[in-house]
Image: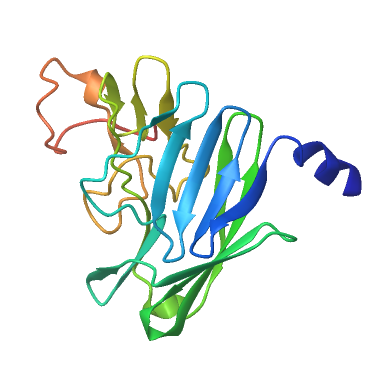
Length: 193
């Protein structure tokens, strides 16, 4: 375990740029989160371009409770354990494991309190200024030289925004038809992208 940590330290380190922000540095990328758990920066360190569009809120992880989507009220990062704790109303706390790699960072929801009151957890959406390629189903957006994406790591994770609260099962195979604008589900083959 100590060897692995030593190998990761040169690739990713975090710091508080201010008392209200957590920043993760990767080889060519910087991600910053506010003290309330919102993404505040998607910076390409090679070009100096910040790809976060400030047109809408960008909570890292929201929760649906009693039919209402709640953004975190506070975020606390424990550097020694690489754990991010997000606090919501009603004494809800989510524990997120942060793992930095050379070119990407992963966030894994490890636990959440009062699970019986949580209807859905939602990563993002994260507004970006990139628009060259957009793949909502797989959760990717790409510009000329930079891409951001959410990779679904299990059948309960979607790369895009859920159509329904129970959208964890396969979706229609949009490419199995001639009319790509037809989003009706009836009579369509399902696929897990």
